[in-house]
Image 1: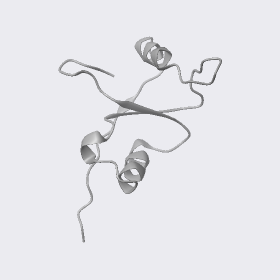
Image 2: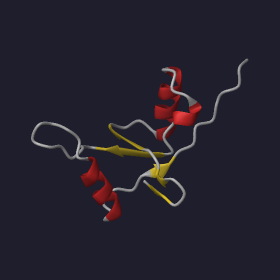
Image 3: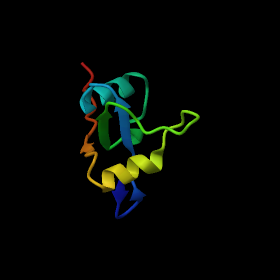
Image 4: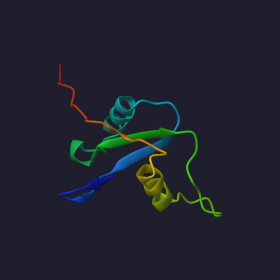
Length: 82
């Protein structure tokens, strides 16, 4: 995602029906630092792929610019220890 200060920010795109909050909770459970959490989230039915099966990240970016996909902001909130 474009960002005025940093140039761009991470958008996590997945194939599936998980919510952004569920994905952030999963990433935290697996040990991802709160500083490394994505700030944008997108769930899709399919990702654009090359003939060899690699994700076409530029095409995802262009799809967002054309309004075909609309990522939503997500924010990780650390759970308090009990």
